[in-house]
Length: 304
Image (cartoon, rainbow, N blue to C red; front, side, top):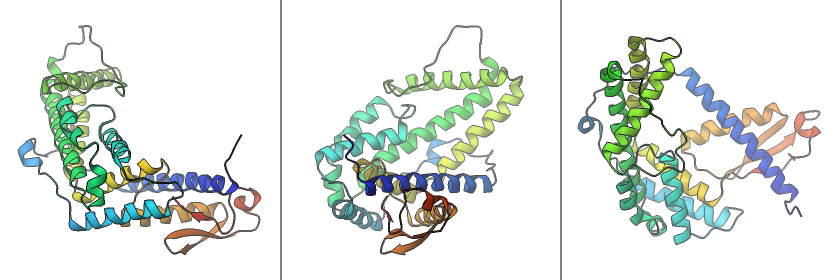
């Protein structure tokens, strides 16, 4: 028996449209940006890594988000230990779902937060979210430095006559037990990337240039991470823990999202307006796709 109401179906339809609009806008933004050229990025973890700290506004915003989720979300929300555990797992997975950066000892140590994130959030603290991210931040910088060094200094030493294999899908793989084990995993990953380029006809110098530039650019972008990036990632994880179709946007991202959403819905024949904190469908344009369909109606609100 299908218990979904027409209203819920319309909300799901609008959500799918919103996600599509956001994806289009994001892709357009990336395309408009000039590819970064940071080939001289320093390869020193001590120079690149500084732990990032939360700001007072982050705690205030987190409290506001919890209040919105508890009082205005259409599904029942309980901010408790079970919720905390879900947030913890989702946060770790969003950062390192392929288990390429964290060590097993990192996860064991950070697991002390598994059942306390709810308490911290309700007291207006996002420090655990920042501490978890800072561990990840340092690990990913270390991996990019390793990758650049491996590509630029050791390609000529690679032996493709020996029998080696690598697990590509690491969702169910364990975390590396040591830095040496993580280095070995990345050695094989990089060797696989080198082999793929060799099969296209590239020689070693061309591969060094391509992969070196790729990893240096990634390193440069990662090194630009700031407290706003961490906060948005953490809050988005919390929102998604309530419902997979719910997320959190920073003010700038929210503005971009609304712009993309507006363009998308106007394109299917819907005029939008703002009502309190919601975007509302003011009317359906006569003869447009939305009017001809039955999923979207005048008066519907974008709730997530």
